[in-house]
Amino acid sequence: MGTKKDLLKEFSLMENERKLLLSELEKYPIDTLEKKPNAKEWSVTEVIMHLVVAESASLAYMRKKLEVGGHGKASFSAGIKQRLLNLAISLPIKYKAPKVAQLKEGETVSYVEAVSKWTDVRNAMQAAYESLEESIIDNELFKHPAAGKISVLQGLRFMRQHAIRHIDQINRTVLSV
Image 1 (cartoon, rainbow, N blue to C red):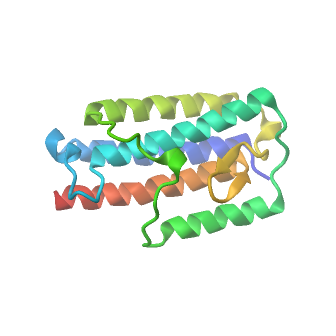
Image 2 (image 1 turned 60 degrees about the horizontal axis):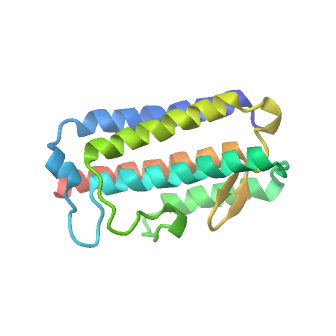
Image 3 (image 1 turned 180 degrees about the vertical axis):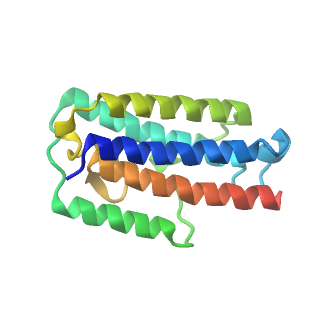
């Protein structure tokens, strides 16, 4: 059983990893962070925007479920799904981003705008998590496009692993540009 303390601790770890990444990226010129390594790969800015889109979608789903209700406790299988998701995302296999987490066709933003949007979504996530009642931490308030519904804590654990995967991608990208 997850607790609000667990949720906030997991979020804090994820947020600290983001801040560490951003402080490391300050070493690079903006044009390096906005440049695609090649036609098929995302720039650092595009990777950050993918994370913004994915994290915004998860927050929107949670807010909607809180508004309309109908969310029960996550099943035993939700824990298995979350662990399988984390395993899958930690493997060195390329996955196509689900439609809900894809960048809008032709959308371009500057690195500074992308970081600002990421900060905004993380601030909104923190506020939402802090306002959750302890009694619903284990409820199905997260929905993965492929794996389905899991608890908000399980979802956050997946999002953290997802962010770590893309932090590794960002680090490879800045070295190749």
